Image (cartoon, rainbow, N blue to C red):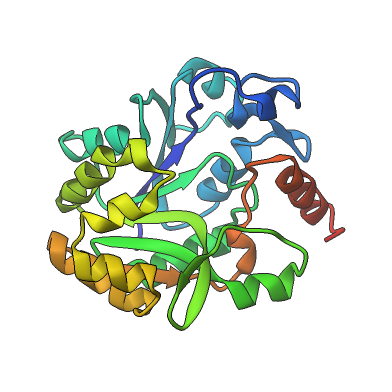
Amino acid sequence: MSGITAVVLAGSRPGVDPFAQSYGTDLKALIPVGGKPMVVRPIEALLASSEVGSIRVLAQQAERVRAVLPSDPRVSVEPSDETIAATLEGMCVDPATQWPILVTTADHALLTPAMVGDFLSKAEGLDIAIGLVTQDALLKRLPETKRTWLKFRGGAYSGANLFLLGSPKVRSTLQLWRSNEQNRKKAWRMLFTLGLTGFLGAVLRLRTLKQTLDRVGRKLGLTIRAVEMADPLAAVDVDKPADHELVTAILEGRA
């Protein structure tokens, strides 16, 4: 793949963010990590990736985020909608959107060009690809880490904050996501909308990850696959103080 549009989600949760405040700012994307505002790190990785043609940064406070980013004509900063799903759904109906789209987040401070290339090479031709790291690989690299694991028959996985959206066809998936965003802490409700058999298979761990995604894809008329990342550090983002300490230690070669 080449000429990919990369989208970096740099929004904020409503209200006060105690995590950001503890590092001297009110915006999570501007938390300093290794001497740089956190959002700068994934942007630099994307700019150094030969596959990426342009970068669209989406944030509620676009001007403040724009002020810290590298001055490069490939980077634009735009106001985001109220939710992630609404923002991405809007891109599906925007005739100016260039497909496919690589989506990542401002807190992906360990993102590297190698990770981007690995993900895109494995995701080519899919409607939706989801970057994941296996539990075995991550615990081998970071035995003490605590992550949220997605458990299926045959293995457990952690998200890598990397997604490929292949074409405007993905709008149906984004609409489903948007209708369930208020239940994001109750994932079973979203699973249930995909059918009773699929719901029970996931809850009881009777299905592998591939079987689960195949079923979801058939329901939505899309090809959806998980991409297992070669570098387990792709699953490490900065979402809480312990993550910040870990990522800082990794950047300094101490972990």
